[in-house]
Length: 492
Image 1 (cartoon, one colour):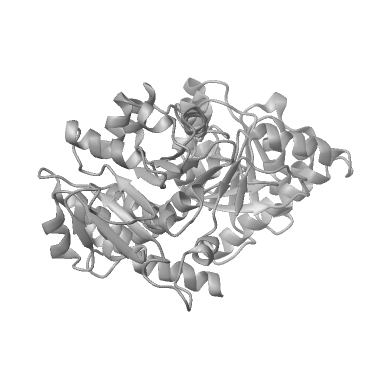
Image 2 (cartoon, rainbow, N blue to C red):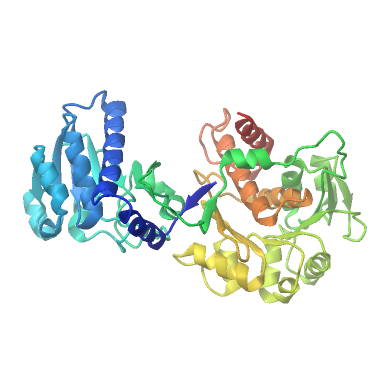
């Protein structure tokens, strides 16, 4: 698993580290790692290191110190280094002295945008092969200051961020104004929430160990090989019933496709048997003749889990179907229209003792809670899970899964290919299949999100779509391929 630590947790670990090692050693470790990544990037992008040029954007404090020390190490490799000081009077003293000793060029930035315009951002930046963002570290909050924003806007080459892209909140990934969009982020000691929650701004992430002793994390990502290793597969004595029977109550006369997609998700996730209950039986059987279909929940037969809500409507009959399913002692996934019904009648779910997974997007989350998730999505999803005593999967490029009293799980999709109508129906079917197999609800939700995201990426980059936007149907057709890919990864 990948662990993510808040700024406060990292600072506490750094304080403990400072009691064990000589002064300055942690910064030297971080800066050496940063310089090594910059050198590798120069080699890969330009074919060499010596004779190349790097510009450092240097703020005050330790983050600026990391950049300055890294600059001094790069000078020893023959790189021409220019440091643009955004707060000259507060630049890291030892780092600045080290860069000067090795022949780095020091360029104080003007105090105002008007002065910078006169001087010219391009003249101050030079013509570097790479820029290092050492403006703000984990102690910074808020957007870039005007002069820094103007300089960043003038960069015309790849940017490597030290610890995190400046202007992005380290704990929430929130952006409230100008920020750095990095091609590579080199983080020191530990991954921070920003690296998962604002991954598009971070680019590729490189972790440089510096010797921190860290507590148990409260934000965790399942690694792909973990998902592959834990995915249910039939054993030598399994049959269609022991592998898990998934019940699907989805679709309506208005949205019959939701029934097809949700059922398809459960089938593709390798459920041993899928039973469908609802008005979309004809459409479901036309696509999946292996499904056992019925018109009512009571006549559907024995199942080990239910998924209810996608395209099911919000009328009295839909409410009664949802209530009937939630009255069982089986694991239940509630999605889409089912969430709209719960928003008006939360008592249907708040008293349940059996596992319950809610899968809202931001709008559905607002209906359930009365407010948008806001900039701190981790805190918001954790609060709903604790309040309702359920597992909550909050959809997004960085999907979050919270269960009461446990760390929040995060799945960074690596793209937004699955942000398309009907893809959530597929996801809810996959989760229900994993619940039917006996998997823990938080793990089931996180593993399903990982497979769903990989399937979307595979569909988007298949020969027929070639990176074009996709719909839910081709995503569905790549779910088993995604599962196979993760299982192969786990077997290596």
